Amino acid sequence: MAQPDPAAMGKVAVLFGGRSAEREISLRSGGGVLAALQRKGVDAHAFDPADRPMDDLRREGFARAFIALHGRYGEDGTVQGALELLRIPYTGSGVLASAIAMDKVRTKEIWAARGLSTPPSMVLRRGDVLREVPDHLGLPLIMKPPHEGSTLGVSKVLGYSEVNEAFETAARYDDEVLAEEFIEGPELTVAILGAGPQARALPVIEIRAPGGNYDFENKYNTHDTQYLCPAPLAADVTDAVQALALAAYRAIGCEGWGRVDLMLRARDSQPFLLEVNTSPGMTDHSLVPMAARATGLSYEDLVLQVLAGASLKIGGAA
Image (cartoon, rainbow, N blue to C red; front, side, top):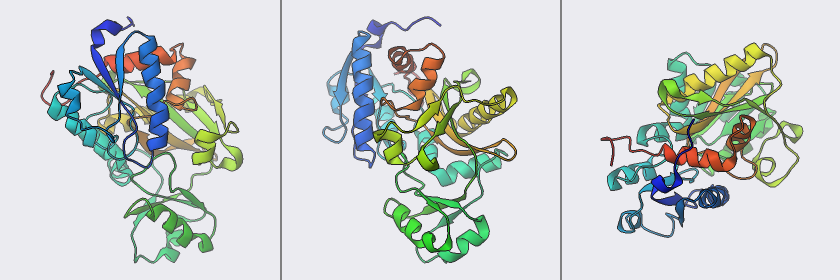
């Protein structure tokens, strides 16, 4: 593939920071992206939507936007909609795909309708009889807020006595709580570049966190988590995992780039979809750059390739 011309990118805004619970991680991701683009010779500038009105992008003549925001007001279709109105091409998925992917409940409903495997689940709200949840999903189970990322508010429930506390932990972030059957086996992730039939899956990564707990601390702040890339899987299992990840990505209508998280059931090597990230992390612990490196694509070249694919999804070119 021919390398994109940095000079052709024009004046680029790297959007990072924002107002979500994942602001800290976005600052790390965006800082890495900004530095990488500048090293490649792109006229790139920092832009924090928490500090400045979006209309400054148009007033200051930005030609493209690299979205390095995570979570709400950045990964959920809101910023994508603003950029569509401003007619500034941006990286990643469009308004609808971003909004759907940010909602794990709606995402799972679409996957289930397409016949794609995802763990059995329940949606919980205050007033529900929580003690009955393990009767339906078994133990252990997972509770999480359906509109957050970076494992914020996620708990593994081992017994009936832990259900209420896990619900309250997740409910700090969301009005709804998603309870899922826990799939026993390796945790996997698949980075994807491109859109539609041209989308391609990068090597599968297996995540081995201390005690099997891939929480916020083990994800970003320690070096104790092991990442195996490519994952040590049989060839047919690797093919099945990548095919499922691509089908999940396409079912939501994702484009540009993304990352699909899965669990691989140990007893029969069946993969189960957990979620799709439409604005993946780009920190020094992040998984998309790791998978790209395994194919010979450097961090800088990955970032430039993603930027070169920036586009408007509604109404064609700017």
